[in-house]
Image 1 (cartoon, rainbow, N blue to C red):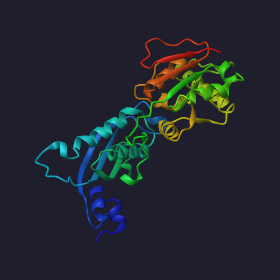
Image 2 (image 1 turned 45 degrees about the horizontal axis):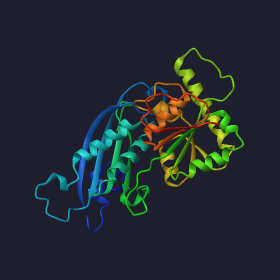
Image 3 (image 1 turned 180 degrees about the horizontal axis):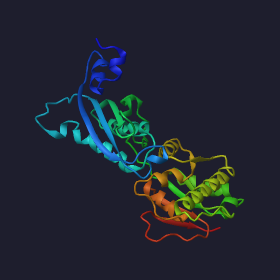
Length: 304
């Protein structure tokens, strides 16, 4: 019998076998899948790619009918590699733990998948492999938005940009009431505050200064109405939308971590980029600001 220590360092397939119940499931696995990616929380890991190795085991529900050698009746190995590629392509991440959780969640969205073991290791950060391993089961996956008829419902928010006059306006609560009354999740965005900003001759540094200034303005808006909650990550946005919260976007993390992020520094254009990323049903602009042309999201303007 394996000891707990030896099992901890065993391949996920051995861990799956050792922790199987009295009615063990079928398993499929991906071994030693190596990709190069930019990931990591340290400054030295930004702007450079490193090798990351994936070992994944998925416990699957046996198909109730004969397979008849039909690939459509099984969980294909491609679904595992596609889950990895999709999460790596969604945004730049700091933590292997975040990546592992998102890959596991995507795999568990497949109807056959019941439990998944995900081990991810960095191969270039030291003399050995540095990594994490998680186990997730279908019962522990996040709640899905459900439509009234019981079917799974896609969440398409309303993204609303508020200029500084709208933030300070006495009718701000009424404006928020009108947005919430549309029946879709609401994401609020803001621009730069009406104050002089520090200036840097280094473009990336100036971009960070401006993003942080937008975030300060987000907190100003949140202080004007108790329903507003400032959020920074896609996970926080998704959670807030599922639970009916009105959020104010703090843009630094999503913008800086985006694999193919917005090249613009204009706050309205950044807000429109978020609306497109979130597949928003509407982009609503409060105030007299210029709206970029060519939006893939329908745009409404509400003047003060």
